[in-house]
Length: 416
Length: 87
Image 1 (cartoon, helix red, strand yellow):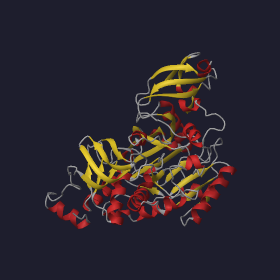
Image 2: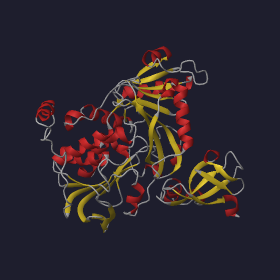
Image 3: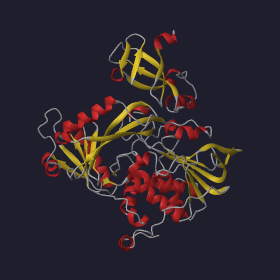
Image 4: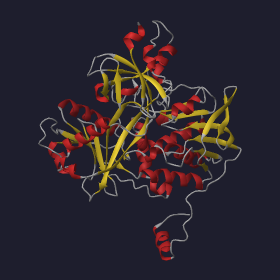
């Protein structure tokens, strides 16, 4: 069923009785050409682009829970392409271009809103770093505008410009940055993949990976054995556990990143804003809630909930930057389980097992990467070769020293 | 989360700095093959369950601690001094 404005009107006139489920609920077949483990944003987009770009439709996506129930449903929905390092820069640039055409591509309203992202800076040194980053973004073909203090005031008059401890020197504006509706991204890709013939199988947990003579043969699941010529592991948040089924030990440590949302308010924050001195970032959802977050809890955890000290820190940072939000009531908070890699960048690569591919290590940047990650993972699985814009996301880069340390903080899991 | 330091008693999480998994205690010998260094520095078991990791009691006794805890429930079951463990 194609969605359109006309369809909404006619369904409204006839009691909304003509809507059908957005995807089928198939039982797993005994064998597929390819199996994707993980029905989150990245897994679903991988399946979608396997069908769309490579014509491979005999594909199953295996999800242990429900589609989009992991980190794609537990994030702060920011979409941007403001990366600096070659390797990251072209990848996120590619992703943003896919975002810009995503709604017409998927015939699904993902509520992508390019409302502009402003990263604030508070010292001369920070300004220099942002000038350099802005130039890298422009060189990549994306957009960046350096704002001075008065320029920031024009966009964000509600900030505390009188703060003498963390004075606002200016900001880097990325006009094409913004946000999207996280669940809709998963649902849109799911529907698109299903319409092209991909089987989306929920409540199907993978319990083992079958390997014979160094070649992948399929997977063991709670719904039986499924054979496959190629298998992709796309399970950020549980990467270490699934990779261990193939005898791998990954350069990943799982950490918790918390986020918060307030009660719905009238439109007040038009941009995505990040504070350069307290690790705080905020935007307002289309429902009106202020969505904000801060830094990791900084220790290995799978608890999907965080600790109070970080809650306190995030609230303090928010109040320091924009005291006007102090009366808003926080409705809820949540924690996403982050695959932290030693250099803060992801992995899209082959493994030591033929036919087994790995997509992991998204740290806290996975949401904006959903389109390009699926695009590149599909390319890798279909052709056996890494995609041009993801060629540096190698699994072996930690041992060879070809790190992608965007923050320049060192090769250690807890530093990013 | 609170940790019970063997020297200072039960203390708030904010007094401690998290360093990483127990793997950091098993430093390869000089001249060890690259794979061993990779294993030591980067590769982790990363269990969803009981793990052992290193914490520094930064705002307390300045001791390195080896903490046995559960990454799913945040319960810690044992805290040892790294210095005594080596001796």
